[in-house]
Length: 117
Image (cartoon, rainbow, N blue to C red; front, side, top):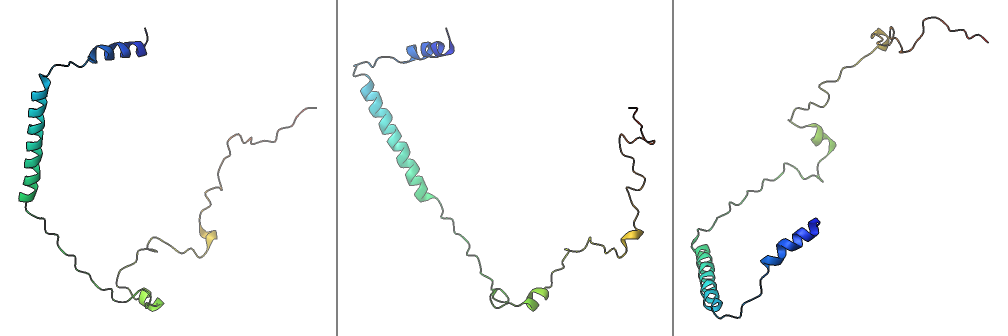
């Protein structure tokens, strides 16, 4: 017995044949009336809520139009630029220490190897 058979076995008892009895109709009608009344109350409660008034955002005009702006306007900004704050200028590279000067290569043999032929 596999999983498929087990699942089919579980589903089989839960499906029951519909009864032709008229006992369910009054209950269905009462349940439907209760559902409609609940929906009506929810709909009328929406009308009773206060309206949310959205604040109108004030538009601020730009100091100049982007199409009218020139290069001088872009350079003449009051904001501080940190673009080149961490840069340093090196005039003579020879003064810097060479990190590879004393480097040892893995597997490097200090003496030449001679092979016997």
